[in-house]
Each structure stands twice: as structure tokens, then as C-alpha cells.
Length: 394
Image (cartoon, rainbow, N blue to C red; front, side):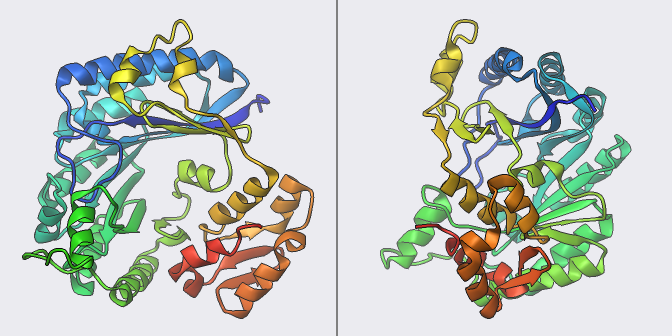
């Protein structure tokens, strides 16, 4: 033990080759020159922050986006070198990079491994050709299959595959086909998210207009109804558990010992620091986010006060907000929340704050009480948004 506190790092790479029709993330296509300028500035930001976190050791790093794998392998190497110069990394640090199968991975994957990256997250979404095309994805299932095999050859022994249910026009049978194809490959981790139609995206605009009666679907497939989506969700759980995957969070499944440490850190209140445009941070009970405009970000001078203009307003959470978040995030996990941890964090028993809510939700079959722990039932998982809303304090 070195006495240092754990810290997670998130690195935002906003670039992609083509914006997907459902995506509301801070991402966009960009020329090579802008990518290079951004990565130079990102390394400056990392160097400027390092001295402030000398009492920490980095337990996880997540390089996300966007599509980080659109960058040249050399850029990722330089990024990792900058992190290692500025921060102390734990010997067993989990280091993840997101990658898109349509970004010429064969040459890049060995470079990632050599740079110290030990976990890969591949965005498949669907193995069905029509569904991929409708989402606006740039790859095919064959591209994904080749990328997965190349990752194994490059030495990656910890791979996540992202899947999406609730795609318009999707059926239980088509998603079952996707699951079977992915299970066959035996990745260590599978994230199975349900599509959310977000405002400001082409999906949001089109389906919003159709729902308001301002336009019909004009050949677009209908949205998956709630009951069908729920059936797909339950089928996913059954198929993955039969294949040896444990559901440890509402949408995440892993083989024993392969749960994503970085995400668990988010759900359990671990301190994390974000780099790059739009990246969020949570340190010492305070939340802050980075500048979201890339042009303003590129003009910051980190050698002389740039950090003052990088972050928006600093929000120090109240005790009430910390309790609410403890419940919101902790209940996402299959193991739920522990009264022992609640007492450790807040000095009072969970029942003294949430006793009536827990009793009500347990009576409705949405929560299960097991010793000192409370967790969502399967039905509670289905309507988790409703359950979480009950933990808001007046």
C-alpha cells in the first residue's frame, strides 16, 4: 500500500468518421489537422492537472468518445505517455479504449497493447445488416468479427462488446441472432443497452414529429413498443446467464472477475477526473465539467491560467444530494446498496432516511431486502427510473 487515494481518469476523444443517427454524444467528424491540434492540447491539459493530484493513484483509465480509434496509433501512444508522466498509475490499472470495427484496427491494436491499454470496448450494436444500416453505423458484422479476431491476436484478453436493443424494426428473433453471434465469440464483457430516442438527433427529430402527428414514418420502421422491449431485455438476461455471464448492473454482463472497474467506480462514488471537451469530473464531493466548444478549448493556455477557463461552475454537493446519488447509482448494480456503506458515508442508518420508501417499494415487489443490503428485483430493474425517483428527498 502506498497510502494514495484511488482516482479514475476519463479521456474524451470527440472525433468520429460519421455521426450515427441516434447519437447525442459530443462527437463529430474532423480533419486530421484538427485532430492533431486537439491531441496536442489534450496532452497540455493532462500535464497541467497532474501536480494537483499527487496524492492519488490512477486505478482506471477510460478513453472514450466519439470514436478514439479514428486516431493514428501514434496519437494514442503519445496520450498514454503523457498520462504516465503526469500521474501515478496503479500496477493493476484497468485501461480501456473504445474502438469502432470500421476504423482499420489491424495496425492500431498492437500499438494500443504496447502503449499499456489492456481492455478493449468494441461497438457492434447489432449483427443484423439492416439494423446497422438504419442506425447509420459505418461497419458490418464481418468488420466487427475481423476486428474481434485481430484484438485477440494482438493480445487483448479483456474485451467488451456493446449491443443495442430497441432499434426501430428490431424483433426478439433478430436480437436473439445478435446475442448468439456475440456469445459464440466469448468476450469477457457484454453491455446491452436499450436505445433512447434523444432530442436533437435525426432519430429524435423524425420520431418526435411522427409522434406529434406532424409527419408519418415515411418508410421508417416503427419504434419497438415497451412490452416487446421488456421481453427482449428479459431474453437477454436469460441467454447471457446461461452462457456464463453475470448481470452486475442494469445493462452490463460479465464473466466472473471481468466486470468493468471503471464503471463500477462511477456507480460507487469513486473520484474521477475528465479530460478533453465536455468531460465531467467528480472529486472530493465537487462536480465540474469542461468547456464544450472545441475552438474555445483549443485557445486555452494551460501554462498560464487556462484551467480557470476550462471548467464551468463548480458544484459542491449537499449532504442531501450525496445521499440521493448514493441510492440512484448504487441501485443500478445487481448487488444493490449496503446499510454498512451508507453508515460509513453518512453516519446514519439508511432506514432512518429511506425506511418508508424502502418498505413501500419492497411491498410493491420492486426492492429486495437481504440482510444489510437492498437491491432491485427483476421487476424493479424493468422500471428502474420509477424506483430511483422515489429516493428523491424533499
